[in-house]
Length: 390
Length: 205
Image (cartoon, rainbow over all chains, first blue to last red):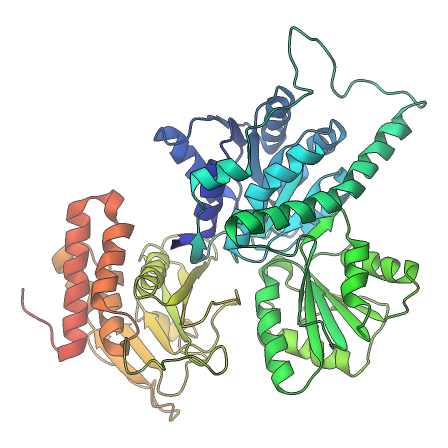
């Protein structure tokens, strides 16, 4: 049965269903509601977990690192500057191959300080070795948190579930919260073979010399490469259990016969779907594709879905200053490697909570359909008059 | 179900969608009002969505919140730019904020005010004004001038988009943690807003 829940509440319910034993966090908007709900569940005695208020995000990440290393299922959440403060620990979690699951309530990064949503925070830690899954709706956020524990524990890799701050975390929308028995069936208890045990002493993340560091890192990359199949298989299995699936790595929409395809991530996809429907009714051959899994980068799945497109637009809410769109660059490389010369236009938009309205999205499609494309990155809905010149 | 709402929904996705924008000031329960409306619509078997536009979160600052009510699943997470109705919890916002911006022709304005303000209907948009002294009514039931539930009752009566019983259920579940008394007085406030908008008069207590 569906209920109308705030996104943060829905995600907290999902985490609850996964029976975490340790939850550690430090508050930051727009993530705080998730942790507040979990703290309430623990305080009310509904959730038997250790809830630890950390002194910082660095502490929160370190606590879940230790918890999972000792064999506990753990959860944390953060956003923006908080996620950046975790960065050093995020690399360590991934390097130690610890299956931590966290939610990033995607928010812009300062300066200037901005509490609203974009993807700069999670994109900035893309090289840390975490699987990153970007969700479109609160239902997908719930389902992906549950999938994330299965993926993390199967691959011994950490998973970051990225959900747009405010657009999802603070939105009330219909969500089906699965039954505990069904989740228990889908997600067995966590048994960590490498769990720290005083009777069997060992070191995690100890020193590594030039003669083996490279091999550790290569192993991490190999595990990420292998995670693609696991992510797809677990999404398929989830679909068998709960009759809801998300395409695993990528989520194409009306790409068959589409000449112009827009690739995007996260909650923006909803409006993109509406615009695709409208333009299709007007006879324009357009489609869209949502990149659900950004790490590992699903090059083959993207090429498979985009091979028929004449032109591609990537609409993304983060960029690398001085280089351009991050997904744009990676998609261009993937297409090039596959021998495809499809032009890819990079459009940056929706930064700092700027709403990507259907009108803005439609204008992006219409401009792309004319064949106008350049390698330079373009900002959508930019108020040139207001942009400072220095 | 109401005659305003097309049944069937076989056409364009948004043909049966209602968009409502709430304007208020921090502390007036604007975000709660939007959540309550979405909960009530959901209770009435519609798809619905509510979310706030947070600015600096402080008492007295202008706040906006949005609601969509639809027969089909709502995919977009955009703000509401062309509402079918606006609910204005503080009439001073009419002078300082673009609260009527984008309101559709024949759009409904539910305003917390003793009377319709002058000088706001000269653009031939033919807005439907529904003005009621919601703060005064709220004061009577809640002991505080919190107008949100009164205005929700009026919106339900003026639009027909949600039922009064669904709103009552939403208030009951949403305010359950604040105690039975809080639920009871808010339902009374809701009902009086509804009666006022249906009958065009305030019912004496």
